[in-house]
Image 1: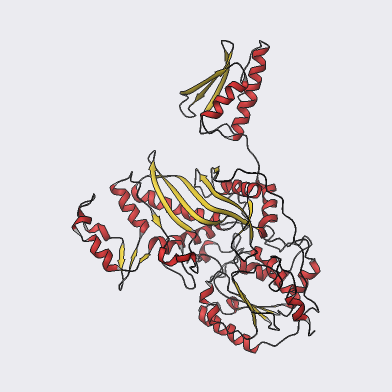
Image 2: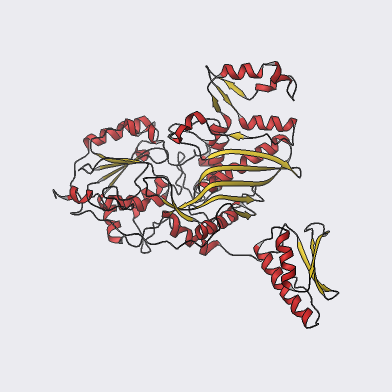
Length: 562
């Protein structure tokens, strides 16, 4: 057994380098290979709230655990270091808090089973629990997490089961449900000193190859637009486009986190306030209760324990380090006289603290748009430049800015995310942005309109590829549509020519006319006139071909309206 450590250090990891961990190597803390037995996960809690407080004796690795899909990486790293014999679980179990009336909301009637304090949802913490309690079934799935978790087929079922049987899960969240984070860390430190030292559970560490993902299709690069009526339907098309056209890329230097990525993916949701979940394609299925929990956080300025930030905190309690500077500004004659006139409203959305102040940007936007509904200056940001120098900040917000604009007497909202995890992050984020859109619209007395999310880096992590592929086979069903917002094309033969009229889809008014003796002459005109939905374009092309044939054969042509 004495040479196991040497074998561990000589393994080749997923990044092609020697050593351990063998995968998911960045954004975790780990020691050099030793006979330490304990791994700790603190789930969604900010790492800086935990790692500096941990005792290092008998600790081999400490890491966040955001998604059920992380189980495969966990199993790979344990098999690569069989000295790991304990896994301690603590920390926030989900990115947002549960509603205060959680027990009343779900009561075990839907996905969750409520005990009055917490809900059994499809979280990463519950995936870990389910793995150690039940293992995998004959289909290599974890019961209850069939769509969320995929174990690479190169990892044998026997090895997966060996991990489950030889690692003891110590669940401090279950054992200490009413304790603070620091109390749980103290207990983890006690365990690190007192747990029985155990030998490795295998004579040799082992690594496994990876399934190859499908190659991406050629794509011009740059912005790609996806439209949908609802959030779930838009998300399905997002997954299709990233999985099909996304380029292989790394998330950071010195990492093995590979993604399929599209730069500047623009998602347009035409009915973002529709919360019908009868179509629920998400790998971790959403419930109204889960959406409500996220919305509650994004509507609150409070910063929960163990978090670097929340979007609610950034947008509703944006910190400015000099309250005197703001007070002097809003009380200056120049500021009071500019555009709005004098009034106490100028700093009504600022909370003055001891030397600092917090700005509620959302409330300020509502007040500003009440005075000038057509303003293009209603922008809220999350980015503190001083914290992002050299882009080294411990936790930079992915949501950077949002801008509401009234058009056609509806409030449209545009949101920019610098980096966007699209499988689990995008759905939550989008329901949260829809709630903010409605809040602003209600605040100024108009209807919500279109919601547009621009994702600078729209990506799918490689541990989701198989799950996304399975989801698309099940949920992506094309529906024949004739409701292109660009308009309708009326095709006929007149004066020995093919004549096409573009009409307004709502009023039927003729907007433009194209004509020619061949289908090509006409479709070149249509193609150069503006954007047209792909399915609609193929329909128009087929009809133009039929019209050209009828014209040549001097037969009657009648457009197919079905």
